[in-house]
Length: 306
Ligand SMILES: [Fe+2]
Ligand SMILES: [Fe+2]
Image (tube, rainbow, N blue to C red; front, side, top):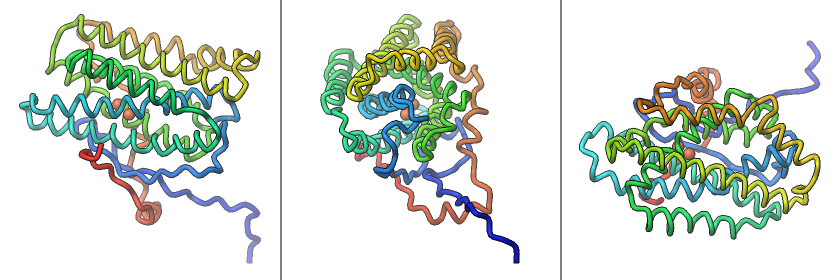
């Protein structure tokens, strides 16, 4: 009898339903994410800067994705095309699931000692009391379309750079799943804006406000979390921020280049083909891995509950 290997690798259960990417049939995937307290505070390469880049997004997307759901639900009665209506409902289902899963991770941040309640409250007030109540539905749809362009371009950078390769596995899977679905549904908010109001000026205003939301909330969130770690005013932090934005992943210049595409008068999200980045994340598992899926208790998020 041969010797047993000293290390046994166990295939982890998948934390989300694997189904092929299908931008023409957007539907939420069932999920089974849980975030044990053993996940380290700095789960990405032990780096506070890289970890808090994602943590900061986690903090505000919960409120923003709920805001998207409320705005889009109000537009459903105006949609005459049943096929497009089905697609928008699928988009809303994906965003509701993202919000549901990211809300779970907020408990980890609180258990790690981060004071995040005030930040969450401000985000909720900006999206609900300012955007929704003062701006009106048409501008809100334009902001959502601009925001969705930003999330699709960030998803492209994250998936193409391999920056999650050394992340804690549950966190890597969380962000890869979210990024892949952002690419899958990237056209829906833009198409909804075209149905709502075709104004080029409105699209630009929405893009600028959407970019402001993303950049503003990420920067404030990162600064807040780094300050609570007592890492904000460190030379190493400045060096790591520079590396994140301008280093090997060239996040800032790539984001700017992709963002500018949105200003082309004839722009449409589907013109930029980045689906191949999302396909390997979402594709169906091989038959021999089927057992892992059937052992997983997957959750669905009810749209009406959000
Ligand atoms: Fe999302
Ligand atoms: Fe999205």
